[in-house]
Length: 112
Image (cartoon, rainbow, N blue to C red; front, top):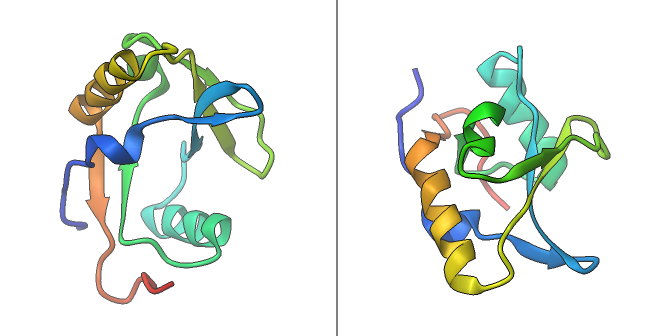
């Protein structure tokens, strides 16, 4: 079993891309934990030290929106962020509260 961890708010702040604020995520429904880590390694081109999992219905309660564009495969943007930084920080903190965080375990690649 993977060690649990909460993400930092800074990691869940949106970025402005093409004129809109978004947080890039991936749909992991029905994936085994090893497949999740492999998906993320493929997406980032390297291993990552930790991840945070969310349920779409919980994200929508914050309220934020999910945009499953699947480019690349399984990619989902989190949208609906306020324009002001304080509002964004508040919603990022709400994501922290609902996050199910996981640290990579030994044997999973985490180097750049």
